[in-house]
Length: 389
Ligand SMILES: [Zn+2]
Image 1 (cartoon, rainbow, N blue to C red):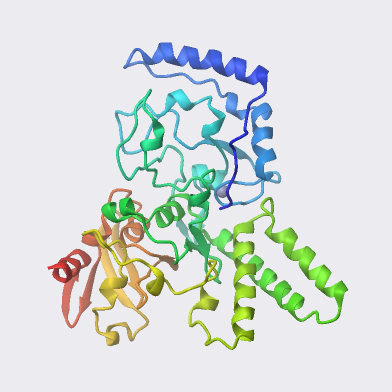
Image 2 (image 1 turned 45 degrees about the horizontal axis):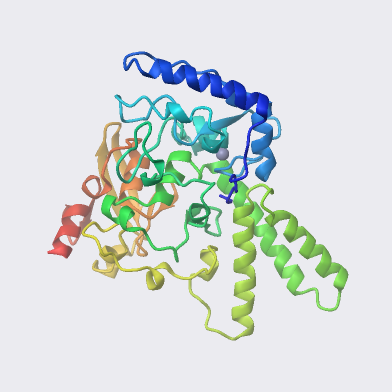
């Protein structure tokens, strides 16, 4: 995810005039609480879409895939006509014609269709807009809302996303969780990756190829010696792949940072950073030594907990986690570093893993998952509570 600076975004005057009239109609309709609101889909018009494209090029603001001929959407970040999970909510209808609420999105991010192997990766963002706290109503200030989904127009949100060498999007390990994430037991990056299927098969493969290419170009640049032509070629190629408008360039930029960092370390004769090559988030440092210890009662991830388990429990490569959802039994694997592998994808938090395994947006992973250690089967919540007491 790249930061999209939309602060100067305006609509063409002829579009804005019609949008103002449509909004006036909506305000009248909304006075009747039972009336279904009718929208005129002005956001589909090229007049506004072209201005969105001009910001970082023709690519999805969430997954960074380019639109060449495939259909693309103007997503309402705050959904206009409904909020999933809140039957009484009419959606953020008063933002329906506000370009500041528009995000360019591909079909998979907005409406689903992505896959993990043979498994559907879910329905996409659509009208999903979970919060970490209270929801605002019409006329209230939106700044007080704490969205779970990362927002590409918020620089700090875009900065939270890193990548591993296999091309998986993940939380940058040096970024501490916020207090609000602790209090809800939700990692915003995990939830965004899960809901938008940012680690679907095709995306992971594409990022992985790109990461290898950037790494190769950095090695070529570093080995160019006294050949300025080779250095210039490599530098130009890297610049092209990492510029904001390039496809999946957040992963390319992360790959470049890590490759130079690894080179700096090797030339300084520093001891090899054990996980540096496996985590290409900027900084590339192990999460455990940089992350603030959990301060709230709710442990967010499993790193503290796995440290209390006997190492031999992980001898088979990990501990089996089992649970039972509405669709039947679910399985995942808990690794020694505290991550959970579900559908062959790494997740930081039990709750995102449980939601991914079951397709249920409400399930709490701490009570969902059970594990057996020393012959005793317990839920993660039981284990956590015994640690806290
Ligand atoms: Zn997308």
